Length: 249
Length: 205
Image 1: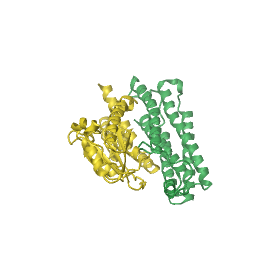
Image 2 (image 1 turned 30 degrees about the horizontal axis):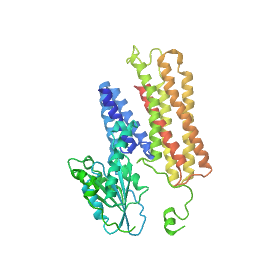
Image 3 (image 1 turned 90 degrees about the vertical axis):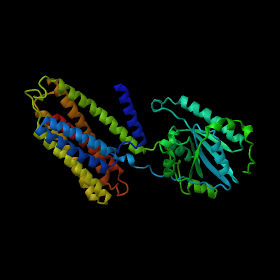
Image 4 (image 1 turned 180 degrees about the vertical axis):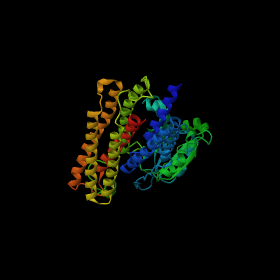
């Protein structure tokens, strides 16, 4: 029990450190390190003074100061990440859209949105399917299962979207949707981003504020589509929806 | 090269493109995190040994270190003051170069090196007169291990500061480019923090 709690705490800390968001780094530069020296002096000076009065008082001072120090170090958590500028590559009459979705990848709503927004232009669609995985499996590099599942979802979605007449390709992304978007944007200069999720209350991404975070993080218009997985089967049958008349590329 | 390709690649850019960084954390920050992590574990293992020896000592906590030995609190206190002061001079050196004050940078680094050397010499003298050796018990072993480990870090810090000072006197640093001073400075402050912990836990409490 204790071991499991410690493992969870360790994973949480390491995940936060990896993302650079859990604690402020007291040694991130010389100024911060010097302030940390001063803080350390004050911290131990108060404990020593308290120990000269009474041992129990020193223990209380130690506890209070330790909690205060931890809260101060965690103060950096609220800092938003810097806004990512996406370099636009102007290709005449081509609309480049980056789509990210998971279980709603084959939903009718997503396909309809892509078709609506690409109306009258030649589209270039990149679909990213995050390899969703548990934290424990991620940190133990056990990602094969997650990637296989993502690949299967992606393949099915690509076949369905191509069957609807869309020029589309896909790739498997990081389990973190924001990271997956950032990775994709480094090699794909998107004119727009579409994030497809389940409805409010059923979507983990909405619960985590992924759409709002993407809007503030990327210098690209972000459209949110609520997926309708109930129509998955309809879209999976290309014959159900006739391919549209594609514009010339 | 077409205008479009030139815009993409930059007209006067040479060499490979910037690395694709998938992590949100900058490499320098990640490196510092890893470094601090390894150092914390190293010192942590020595502190664990120290506290274990102290707790299992039959006379603790009323008598520590075991009679008839004593830790030289006063001399170590003076040494602590020297090392803490050296952090101030190190900070002054960095602030000076940020304001394009090269003399201040050089003076700050020299003073820091002198105080660091004084700390090490004082520690050697303390070892010579402390009255016990590593064979006089587990407490003595962990005492020399812990303070010696810190002394080794001070020595490494002095080497780094010497390199930085050498470059400072050659005029290598500027308000925009002083990474070669900043990193030894961070290391020096870390060594200072560790000594404060060692001094308080070993000598005072």
